[in-house]
Structures are given as structure tokens and as C-alpha cells.
Image (cartoon, rainbow, N blue to C red; front, side, top):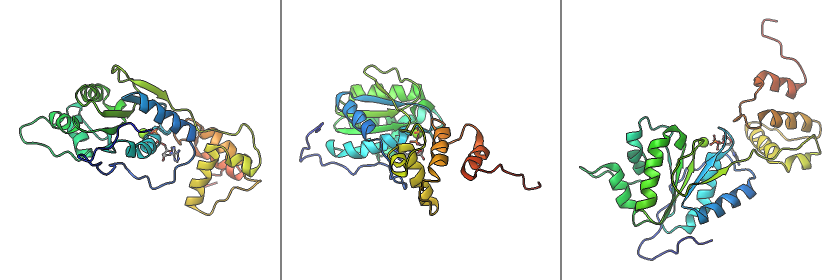
Length: 245
Ligand SMILES: Nc1ncnc2c1ncn2[C@@H]1O[C@H](COP(=O)(O)OP(=O)(O)O)[C@@H](O)[C@H]1O
Ligand SMILES: [Mg+2]
């Protein structure tokens, strides 16, 4: 998919995207779906509960689609922005657009993006939905070759907003062989992180416990619904004793 052909006059700037230190797991179908949706809509919002993978997916999609845009892809995280009036400034800073004395940051941002063909990821828009929506509306109107991939649990209510609800990672229904278990994204991710943290290798005898842990973690944003204590019980097969007991 080539969204916008490169022109020699405006060479693509480097992708200003975060580089996660951990490996990316699975999600092939979801990535393809998001990429296709971005190809047909200038505003796509990824939604779903915290921890479902919106930010990781947005970064991954932007990294893959960036080369299709003449001016690449970049990302601004709105989570640390304390005040809606600072959104323009924060996005400009993230995109490497220098402030201009005497000019509103959002005007500088628009002036800079007006001629650019680029994909802008706006992460955590639910933090400041009205301010984010206002900025997105102005970008879509004033910068005709800018595409926006937003993550937000709250609708932006901007005309043309395409919404994609991110599904949980695939899970095995019941314990299976090591190879079968690893073909499911949740198990693959668990094992990748456990291996990075220590010398964990999934074995036939640990498949049921790992599958159970993944089941309990599903949709919880990495925080087990029944608490860490119950996960340790699942992993060790033993009840925890308190230090003084
Ligand atoms: N496909 C994936 N591959 C590897 N790690 C992932 C993947 N999806 C999510 N994660 C990890 O799970 C955690 C939550 O994902 P994140 O994208 O931050 O969720 P959200 O933005 O929906 O709150 C993060 O530590 C992230 O790195
Ligand atoms: Mg996120």
C-alpha cells in the first residue's frame, strides 16, 4: 500500500517513534486490519481497556506504515500533558517542531504539518479528550495529507473517526501441548517475558499453569483480577504462607 508517493523536494524525515525495548508478539491479523483501516480513513481510533495493547499496536503499525508516507510517522503521548491548553505545544515538541515567538503553538504545528504527508500517532487521547479532539479536527481540516492514529478509550467525536476495538490476545481454551500453547499470543507473550526475566522455558508440565495465568490476566492490563497471591498459588501449586507463619 503506498498512501502517498515520495517527492524528491520533501524527503522523509526520520520516524519519530518510540522503540520499545521488549519484543513484539503476534497480532498479525490485527495489525493488517489497522493498517488497512488507516489506508482508508484519515482518523482511526484504537480503543479497548488499559493494557489490551493499544499503544504497542499503534507504534507497531506506525513503524510499518511510516515508510509509506513521504514524511514518515511520529508519535505524541498525551498522558503527561497536564492541561488541555498545552496539547498543541506537547504535540509540536514530540514532532520536533520548534516554537515560534509570538505564535500560538497550534498555529505553528498546523503551519508545519500543512505541507507534510505523515502519520501522527496521538497516544492516550482519553486523558484530554476535548483538547485532543479539537486538535485532531484542526489537523484533518488544515493539513490534508496528515493521517491520525489515535488511542483513546473515549470517542473523539470528530467527523470521519473510524473506530477499532482491540481484541484480547488469543488464548488456548484448555491446556494443550507446548507447541500448541505457544501458538497462542497470550502464552507466547508470557513466555517471552518470563524468558527475558530469567531462564524460563515452557515445558509440558508447566503448560496448564501458564495457560491458567494467561486466562486470569486476560483483559486485566497485566494486573491479575484475583491478585498476585493467587497467581503464585497457580504457579507453585502451593498455598502461600505469611512470613510470620
Ligand atoms: N503485541 C505485543 N507484543 C509484546 N508486548 C505487548 C504486546 N501488546 C502489549 N504488550 C505489552 O503489554 C503491556 C500493555 O500494552 P499497552 O500497549 O501499553 O496497552 P494499552 O496501551 O492498551 O494500555 C505493555 O507492557 C506492552 O509492551
Ligand atoms: Mg497505552
